[in-house]
Amino acid sequence: MMKHKGTIIAATALVLVCILAGVLYLKFKPQAQKGEKEITILVVHGDKTEKEFQYSTDAEYLVEVLKENELVDGEEGEYGLFIQTVDKETADEGKQQWWCITKGGEQVNTSADQTPIADQDQFELTLKEGY
Image (cartoon, rainbow, N blue to C red; front, side):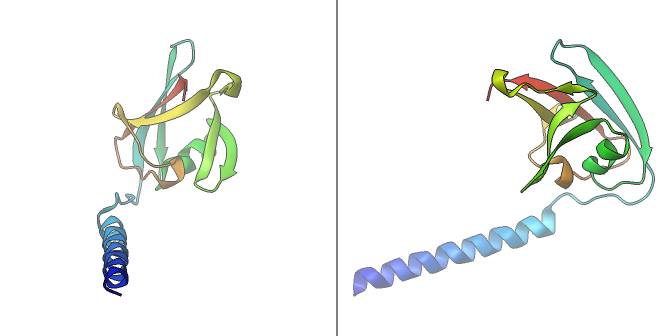
């Protein structure tokens, strides 16, 4: 009986920690900036050539800019748009290629659908090889 009581307490504590983590995330997650913004997107192709795109937008999330300007194509999935093609270059799954989103050189840990944009942001879309 004592063993079950400890398990129940541990499970309850785990649930409370998860709820607290969720509340903290919602409170401190990056917020989208409303209004007109200027952003830059640098595309780094598989052959290491680079192409820079500058956009004026009132979009709040990166995916909106990418789709509006037909810079990317992909499949809608559970976490939003899975980017397969950028600037007409498609990642080759056979070579384990994928498009990596970075902001100011730091990897973004959200999908383009959940990545808020602010004035003067610079994003990079880089074709990577190997999972």
